[in-house]
Amino acid sequence: MKINAKIIASTILLCAVPLLLTACMSKGESSSDKDNVAATVAEKKPFAKYKNTVKYTVGKSIPGAPKLPKGDSYENNVYTRYIKKNLNAVSVDKFEAENGDNYDQKVAMAISTGDLPDIMAVNQSQLQQLVDNDLIQDLSSVYKTSTTKSIKKMYDSYGGRPLKQATFNGKLMALPTTQTNNLPTMLWVRKDWMDKLGLAEPKTIDDVENILEQFVTKDPGNNGAGKTIGLGLSKTVGGSYASLFQADDVMSKFNSFPRQWIKQDGKVVYGSTTPETKKALGYLQGWFKKGLIDPQMSVRDKIESILISGQCGAFFGPWWSGDYPLTDAYKNNPKADWQPYVITDKDGKVKAYTQNTAGSYFVVRKGFKHPELLAKIASLLNDKLVYKDYAYKPIVNYGLKGYDGGKPVDLLINYATATTDMHDNIMKAVNGKKDPKTLILDDYQNYKKIKAYNADPANADNNAWSGHITRDVSTGKMKDTLSKIEEVHPVFFGQTATMKQKWANLNKMEDATFLKIVTNQESVDKFDDFVKSWHKLGGDEITKEVKQEIKSQN
Image 1 (cartoon, helix red, strand yellow):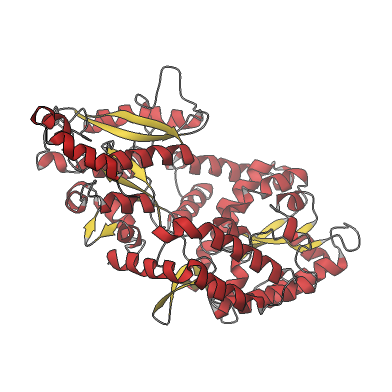
Image 2 (tube, one colour):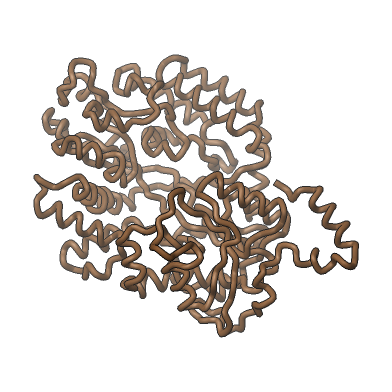
């Protein structure tokens, strides 16, 4: 989205009038600009406290049902007071909006008018708009001076990919939040069913096929003839984040990566349109014909119900599936022994695409006198608070009581290995090699769950089980598999101009075609018609735009 042309024209006319010149010059400026003065070299250091109080405005994303201590607000809470105490910086919310569409609309309005808060979070397409319209500050210099060595190492642990997505023509225009890869996806299986049938733990996709066939034909769950489901799948075969519960782990065995922009033979291609994806869909169709996949998948929106009811024996999901959806399945039947397994190819390798390593992007309004403040807050909250002030009681108690995150700038940065690091820290505490009191709050809570489970596994509740199966078992297997993973890095995660107009319809066509092929309603050759239509109905144009976007970030 470009700045509204009428607004620009009106602004030019107004500024031609001498009496209104001052008002036009101040458009978009923070009310605090008059009071703030540029930071000294010493004040730009990550943890340095400003001599004079720095006031800054933010665009604040809030939950739908805020929960704060009595007397607190999003402008005055334990986090804002922590920032004031350490940096002498005070935030004012230029706008507050509920997470999701409401917040996005507020951001869109700020961009269209050019009236931005000093700091706010944006998505990839909004970042591109802000760069195109020269509305935000180049952060290249302050990244060097005002982030700690640890913060730089955190970003570097992703191979530089998050910062690259925020870089345009060699300039760092935002600080991105980071998202760990959470690889590999795992096959979660009813081990009690496998034990009943005398089946070995699965290692390859052939092993999986055999287990599913045994489940369906021999009914180890006593659901009744023809009522046991092998692999749980829903309508979305692959592509969206929901596909973590779907068939990505099968498709990757064919070098198929649906809904991902990847490089193949040096060319940027859309993973859903490759010959490898056709082969993968044909393979899944073969499983469906054999009755190994949920026969009702074409009308099933979610798979939780068949997991909880005990009808289904397996599904693909991330390491945290023990938290959701399996904690309810365990609560319903503690004897249902769900266990995670990593499925490799014949060479013992796991090929998987990495998720977007950058979540949202925090930007600084052009003209704000303290662009370094964003980097300083990021360093304070992700380095000092986590590794030095982890026992800071006001914030610890805040979390224990379940209050909403009151961070004025909720910029989460961590290491790419954050998940396995979490596993290591918790298990060191469990095994007496680390003081549990040095764990961050969430890790400490899971430490207590694992201790409770280990003390009495037979009578552990679902919360203790979920802590054990995720923070001990699945993350432990993740760590053991790291050396076997061959990562495929998608090259684009944003939204181009044509995507805004045509992407939704292209996705619907893709979902419908893939579902019909897998459920044997269409021949696998229908895939070729889909590819032709995809290119004709906007795919070619979008591909060109994606290539241009990638080029601008190099």
